[in-house]
Every structure is written in C-alpha cells, then in structure tokens.
Amino acid sequence: MVRHFNFGVEIEAVAKPYGGGESFTNVDWYRQLAQKLQNRGIEAVHDDNSKYSKHPEYYGGKWFVTRDGSLKRPRPFVCMEVVSPRLDTTQHITQILSDFWEAMRVHFNPQRDISCGGHVHVTPVSRNNKFSLRTLKKIAFATLVYEDFIADMLPPARRENKYCTQNSRSESSGLRDTLTWGKTTAGLAEAARLIQSQKTEMELCLYMQGNRYVLWNFQNIFPNPKTGRCTGTVEFRGGNQFLSTKGTLAWVAFVLGFISLAMDEDLIRNPPPYVHPTDPAYEAQLQSWWKRVRKAAKKSKMGRHMPEDYKRMHMR
Image (cartoon, rainbow, N blue to C red; front, top):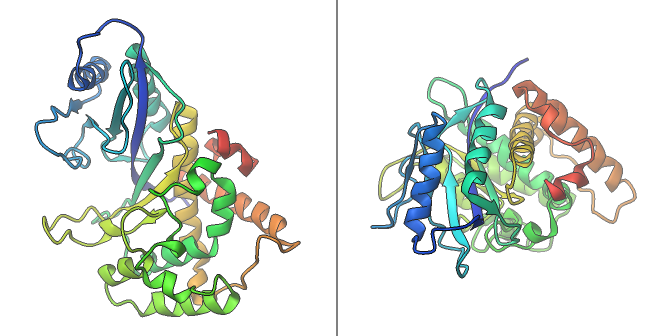
C-alpha cells in the first residue's frame, strides 16, 4: 500500500563564503542564497532581520532563508536556517533537494558543526492534512517504545543536545513523571494507558513534553494560543546536520518510515515488554526494528534513501 506524506525540513547551517563580500551583512548573504534558488526556478525569500520572524513562509510555496538564534560564529562564517516549503512524497523529492544543495554550494562551503541539526516536520496527505488524535497517540507511544533504539541511531552530538532532549526526560512533562524510576515494562504499560486517556491534542502534547526542545515535538498539533495557527505537524528534531542531498533524504526517509511503522504497528493497543540496552536480545531487536522502518519507508517511495546499517546514520 502506498502512503504519502507532506513534509518540510529546517536546515541549520554554518557556512563559509568562498570569497568576496567582505562588507556583506548576514542579510546580504541570505539574499544571495534566495537569489540562487530563484535562478533555478525555485521560489524563495530571505529574512531582512527587521523583526523576529517564525518561519512565515513555511506553509507557503517558498524556501525561507533566515537567522538561527542558537548559532553565532565570527566572520567569515555565516549562520543561517533554511526552511523548506511544504513538500510531499508525490513530488520529485531527490531533484528538489539536489537543486537546493546545488544553490547553497554556489556561494558557500557548509561547515561541519556539532551545534547544527536538521528538523523534519510531517503531516499526512489527506483532506485536512492533519493526523487524527488516535493516530497521534500511536505515534507518541512509538516514540517512547523505540526511544533507546533511536538514541543508538543518532550521532553522539545529537543524543545529548539540549535542543532535542528525549521526551521521557523532558522536564515538567507527564511522561517524565510516569517514568520517574526509569523505563520498565510496567512503566510502558502505564504510559500507554495515560496517553490513551488524553482527550485532546493539547493534553497529549503536555503529557509528551514540557517544552518544544524535545526529540519528537507535538506542539504544532493544536492551535497556537496566541495566533490560533495550527500546522498539524509532528516534528523530529534529532536529525544529524544536513550537509548534502543524500543526508537530507536519509533523515526524511527515516522520519517518514518511523511514523508509517508506528501507524501500522499500533503498539499502544498491546504495549510490548521493555528491553534494556544491556539485554542480550537488545541488538537483534534494534536490527529488526531498523529493517521494519526501512520497509515502512518504502510505502512512501523513500526506503532506498536509508542505509542498511543504522550506524551509518551517524555520518548522514
């Protein structure tokens, strides 16, 4: 069965211009990148930094080049965040992302920097482009069941990054309170019961996290109290730094495969026993899970972008 998703990426970057532009401000460089995208027929706008802007173009049809408040580097380096428009898996995703990285490398040499990460936002392709509350509960519980597996898949710099804390360790969350004494089979069953008991998207989010700086962010599944805006996305914030088409595709494929598998397995109906990372059966179960995620990603025509060995995601 084919299953398509909408998705968007947020690319944090520390880039070194190839030369010239000594008098350029960050805004000048943002303009240069937006122009190079436009030259390739890709709609793009840049942030003029006149006021704080929270990705106003994200669900329009344009790439948005803006600042990243968490990144600060001396010249000649330029710090930025590039936010894609809403894309979907019915499109020629490889070509779209390849065009972006080609435009980026016209002016810049993106630097490896452990402070940078990649985020992936996902919604279903449906009439309202939003997950049902029941589906969100399936996804939320799967993020807990497979939390240790994901930690082993992540590069070391992302495992302990304060901007993508494991949901089970998120301060002021109901989930953390449930697992006060650590993960156990009984703890997973209790978390499943409590997730099932949440009556609204807002309640589910508050149970799963204390703030947005978590591995799986559910804050976009209900209307923003200030703006009333609701994009409906589930956001994965743990991706390794995106530096290429291949790496970006690998992380997008993982997130789509993970969510698709969570929808199919429906573990919340029958919570599995907890397997500790020191258990002799742990590695075999991790390998089996990785194969299932790759197979699930194939439903969205993305499976080929995931490596056979999960450890290779460390370098994607």
